[in-house]
Length: 293
Image (cartoon, rainbow, N blue to C red):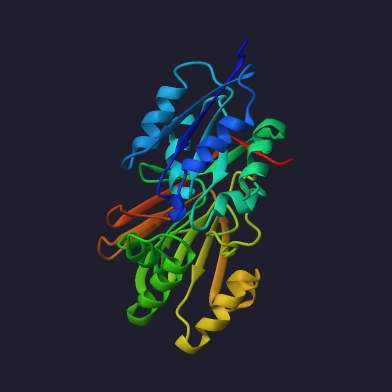
C-alpha cells in the first residue's frame, strides 16, 4: 500500500542541465509499494507556485523543488505558514539555499536526505509583496541578475560573463536607507538584504547570517576603486568581506530602500521591478525546510 506521497516540481531548464534522466532516477529511488511519487514540470514563470498549491490540496509528506533558487522560491510561496515541508534537489546555477544549509548537490545524496532529514522552521524575507528565502537587493547584483536573465545559456560561466560585462559600465547608485533609525543617505555599489549567508556558488555576502535567528542581514558595499575588484571577488569567496572598510553590516528586522528612480532589483537570483521604494522585513519561522541536522 502506498502510504506516503511526495510531489516533485521540476524546472526543466534550471542550470542548463537535462532532467529526463533525473526523473527516471527519482522513480527508481523510491519503492513503488511504499511511496506515491508525482513529478510535474514547469513551463513558464509562476508555474511552480501553482503546481505546489495544487499538490498540497491533498495530504503529502513534502513538496520538492528541483531547480535553482528561483524555482525553490516559487514552490516555497505555496508552503509558507503550512505544516508541509519543502524539499530541495539543487539543479541551479548557484544553489545558494542548498549550499547554506548543507543540502547535498549530488542527486543521490539529496534524495536520501528527503527521507532521513528533519523539517526545520526557517525565516523568510518579504520585499513589498514578494517573498525571498536567500537575498534581495539593489545595485550591482541586480544589474548582473538582469543581464544574466537576458542570456539563453545558464550556468556558472554565464554568470561570470554577466558579472564582467556589467562591471565594465556600472555606476553606483544614490539611495536612502532606513532600518528604524531614520533615513540615511548612501552611495552604494550594492545594497543587499540577506536571509542566508551567500548568493550561491559559495559567494558569501553575509558570512554570519542565519536563517533561523528572526533577523535579516543588511549588507552595504560602498564604492571602491575598480582595481580592487579582484580583491573583492576573493574576499567574497573566502568570507572576508567584513574586513573591508567599505563593507557595512547590520542585523535588522525591517529596512526600506528609497531610490531616486525606479530600477531593477533582485530576489533569490531573479530580477524584478519593485518601484522606487523597497519595504523589506523578516517573517520569522514561516517555512519548514528539509535539511541536515
